[in-house]
Length: 105
Image 1: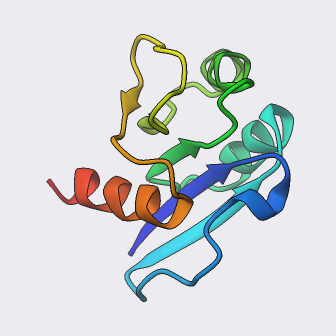
Image 2 (image 1 turned 30 degrees about the vertical axis):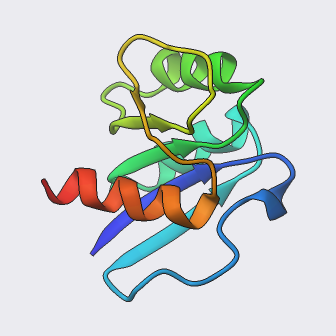
Image 3 (image 1 turned 90 degrees about the vertical axis):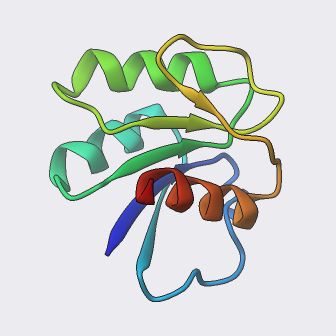
């Protein structure tokens, strides 16, 4: 099972439908909550940042506070941030699917 942490403000911005059973989606509303969830949950395989305007701050907070963060993905149209992976989609459910595909290889 893959676990993806979706960071989005407002919280309802994340995927509205449940992904398939091989994928678990966790939610965080901001950088602080994302760092907290990453610290408490070592099984998170990837982070998907949907908050485009806040993406640089969220990525910086994760890198500052998490020793070995999982891969960080951004939605299409987000600012380019070195060390992150941009995905060619904007719809949250599609982005989660693309993250799962990237992780599966």
